[in-house]
Length: 251
Image (cartoon, rainbow, N blue to C red; front, side, top):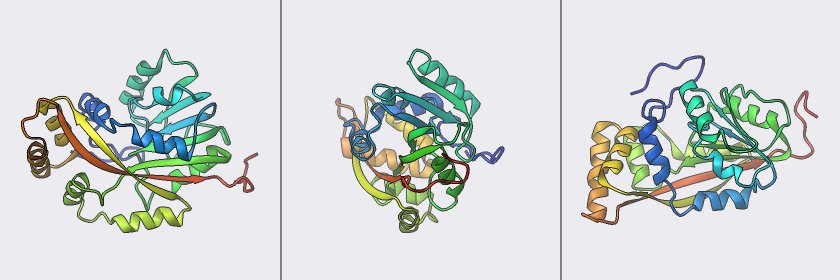
């Protein structure tokens, strides 16, 4: 259930209130690593400074830290900040800071890659966060936004059932108008057992839509002992900060 926004931050209806179930979801997502493959092609972070906006409990930070020069996660929800700090406390050159996409707790021109995955950047209205990302990026750095592809079924069908006013073409036009290129990525989610699958779908959708989603997943997979697989589409939006343009106050 959504709660009122605090300090200009809109609460996440899943990870804020169900972090343990969301951990199951993170582990289930993109088991083939397709999103990571596309990100590496579009904005290789090896040996570079990375900022992960809306990092939640830090699930993705370790993957960046494998090859990045430094990694900073930024998260507005203090309980998740604490969880993320525990997760990365032994990772070198990796830290988590409390802050929002609209007010990143970072100096100008400190990052080569700013990454956000299903966090804040959902289309019109996210312009303050886009400006902040440009502020902290060095010239030639890249902003990569990973979002769910609501036109890709069956997951996108369930999302549209819960969000009837969401307009996928308008969102894509917005990002194109902001100078992003877009790559669609087809992934697979895999759950070890039925209980985990059901728990995740129940935190992502309303009760009616979750029941529909569970029924469809069970029908698709049958009574398989090999777990439960769900196809889910994503969009990866990427744009570089022009090397010849500086924002006011930047060097």
